[in-house]
Image (tube, rainbow, N blue to C red; front, side):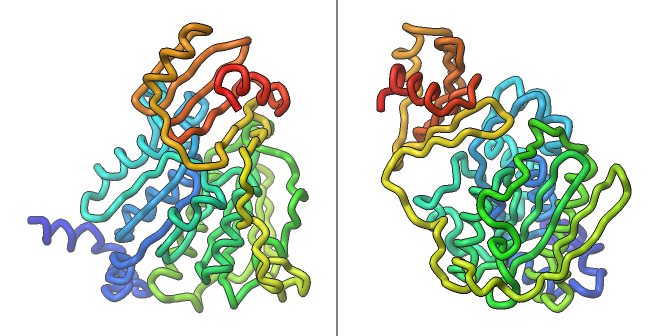
Length: 342
């Protein structure tokens, strides 16, 4: 019965000549990493799992909230009510979709310190992130290790997509300099859900071309479109910049590990994320005992939320803390020092 299910599950995909039986076999032997399990990431994971990619791994640092449900297709109201980490909720859903493959959700933040562990031995990296700091990290790791990187981004009714192949195309740094982002996010400019589906589908299609060995079919442009106003254009991926730190000088600046606590203001989210300098494991039950002396505390199997000084602290088992209610790093640092300790 299982063999019959396996044959019928992918039958329509196998009938598509560019994939065929050989392409399906290759997919079953492939390993992909999806960074971010939000709007783009959930669509990407859905496609990879249903296509039969043998090992699908994803990492996400956030938890499900009601505002996610408009566009993040793997989540439901129960996930939001339970404040489930997105990686946990997505893994549960996807394992019900395809039990034949290996699906691995990681609750955490992708950093220079853990990217070797998270991205090791994958054949391809799919971009489901919402910030260029993480994208440059993926870009540098991909080009250092010769791994294809499939980029996608959406905001409002606009989307962009490109595929970067080490040794064959320029890299992300050749197109966008650090600090040149528009500053727009889904939390400040909103996002139209169909745009997410379109960009993620472009990404998934390019990923399938790579995984089945049909790189000659890849689109060699940066695609950009505005779905609401109905226009699009493509920019040819030309020669790399001669001074590019990543694909030409091979310096990979985003991979430098800094031995200090990282504080990141999550633009448009009224939140500062504080990440420990070294890996740690927290007993959230112990933190509940400490913090309920000074504020209202809610503990779930995956995180702890505490209301203190007009702000909300969200603690994760990997030592990360979200300080919600401010984008002021100094204020977040002060509250963190007072209740968590530096």
